[in-house]
Image (cartoon, rainbow, N blue to C red; front, side, top):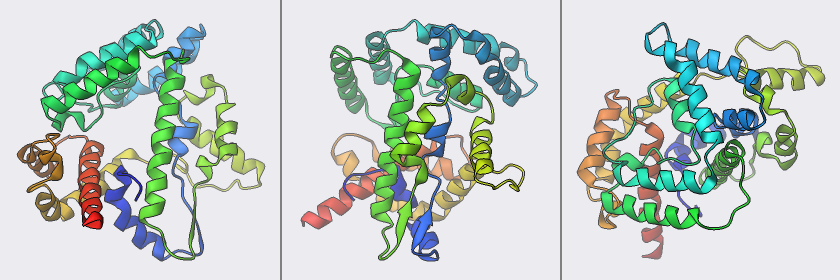
Length: 315
C-alpha cells in the first residue's frame, strides 16, 4: 500500500468477506465521521450562543455513565470543558497539546466511559492512542514539531469544525488503504458516505441536529424513507461499539503469537520509536481483556507490518 494505516490489521478479514461478494460491494465506512458530530462541536455551539442544544447530548452522556456518584458531575464537567475549549485559540490549544506529549507515555488517561472519551476529545489536539507506548525521545520530537505548527498562520477558528475535518480526513485515508490492501480483481468497493456530494450534503445539516443522541440513525431513516424504504429493523443504523471491540479483541487473541513474533525485534524499536518489550506486554494485556486502546495497538502493528513489507520490496 502507499502508506501504513490501521485498516491493514483488518485487511485479511475484509478480504475474505469481500471475496464472497459480487462485483460491486457497498460499505458504510465514513458514516460516523460524516454524519455524527465530533464532541468538540459542543464548543462550536457555545461560540454560537446556542447553549440549549447541549442539553440532550450532555444528558445522554450522563445516562451512559450509569447511576454513580461520578455521573452527578458529568454535566457540569462537560459544560466547563466545552466552554474552556470555546475560549481557547488554535495556537494556545496546539501549544497545550505539545506540552502534554512528553509525558504521554507515563500519564495516559483511561477512557473507560463515553463521558471520559468526550471530555478527552474537547481539545484542539491531544496525544493519539499509540502515544502511551512511544519512547520519550519520539514524543519529544513530535512535541517540537507541534510547537512549530502552532505558530504557523492558519484560518482555523472553530475547534469542532477543525476536529471533524481531521477525523474525516483520517477515515478517508484509512479507507483508501483498505481498498488497496483488499483489492480483488473485477470487484468494485463503494463507500457512499465518503462521496463528495454526500459529504457536502452532510455538512449542510445544522450542528444542533447532529449533536443530538441517535442523530445518525434518524437521518439515515429519513433519507431512506424519502426513497420509499420504511420497514427497517429496530436498532438499524446504530451499530454497537461494544460488539466491534469484542470482535477486535477476539482477533487479537487469535493473532497474538504472530504479533509477538512481529514485535520480537521490530523496526520501530530500531528507529527508537518504541521499546519492544513494552509493546509485547501491552499486546498480551489487551488480549487478556485489559482496557487498553486497541486502535493504538493497531497503529503500531500496521506501521511495523508496512515497514517490513517496504524493506522486503526494496530488497
